[in-house]
Amino acid sequence: MAPFWSGSNGPPSLWLGRGGGTVTEVEVAVVGGGVVGLSAAYWLTRLGKRPLLLEAGHLAGRASGRNAGFLLTGSPELFSSFERRVGPEAARAFWELSRDSRELLRTELLDSGRVECRFRDEGSWLAVVGGGEEEAELRASGERLAGLGFDLEWHEGDEVERASGSPRVRAALHQPRDGGLDPVLLCRGIATAGGFPVRTGAWVHRLEPCGDRIEIVADGGRVLAERVVVALNAYAPALLPWLAREIRPVRGQMLATGPGERSIRGVWYLNQGFEYVRQADDGAVVAGGGRRALRRSEIGYLEHPTASVQGALERFLHETYPDFAERPIERRWAGVMAFTEDGLPRSGEAPGLPGVVYAAGFNGHGLSLGFATGRWLARRVLGETDEPLLPPARPGAPPSPLLP
Image (cartoon, rainbow, N blue to C red):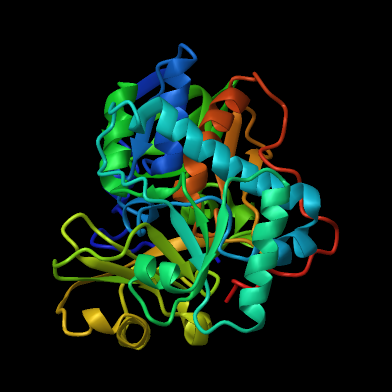
């Protein structure tokens, strides 16, 4: 399914779509102003380049600014299940990439204070509501990950209830180096720390080979680049149409209550990520998910919340966190994620477009994978590595249980 125009701006007219008569010549251009594109531009500057970043709207305007701000290691799918599906090599590499991305981001920007994005290093929690077989598999996943050298701990009983703020959550895996942040402030901070030029309002319509360079036809003028990074996640098929076979756009919905007492520590993924909860600095409860029984209706590019999913979210919040039941809902929103059949991102060189590399399909986990993926994209587009971002899933891997 090719991306449709959404949001407040419709498709450009004939006159706007011509892109103007100006031509900018650069060595490297990055298309996409979310966390992956900004990270790629940041690392390109660290490698001695001066990339031009092109963004259709404003920085972090799509999924990068519409998520819960979870800096979380791994996948919402339980590791034991993930490993059985995609194979040990791909599963371990995925967890390592997210861990390395977290540590790279903390070391490079967060812990030093170079970027202030309200990061709280209170850890992440992977939990189930209600126990049973899923709890047993969660514990087994933790034992397997600990055996592979990952830093996490199993907790249960009153300790988990106190940390979660919910009487229904009694067992969880805790990853102490994870945390929560403001994703929009993070993206803006990466741009400031990188110091590279950013052109907003530059909707890119197409990429075309032009001699030994790539012509980028965009609103506001054309760009000629020797090398191009495409970092559009769910919207990548607009420029790389063959990716429509690989990527499924899925709407994620969220809500936030009014401020109040802050009793939830860390960020919480519940029920394999079908629900997730945290509290912001002012105590506002931020909750997302609610699409488990409505997954088919959430496919597509519309960024509008719906009554059905928002209702499911409210029921989950009231049942699992009864102490917050009386807080008013102050904001509702939605964003479009990019899911793949096996739950692994897609990345590499773009066929028919020499000098163009891409990464897309982060399965709702782009914030956690983005900084290290950006470094890989920078190295790959400059020819400094030919290693893949991740090994492929084993042949015949069954589909991800998180897919609609």
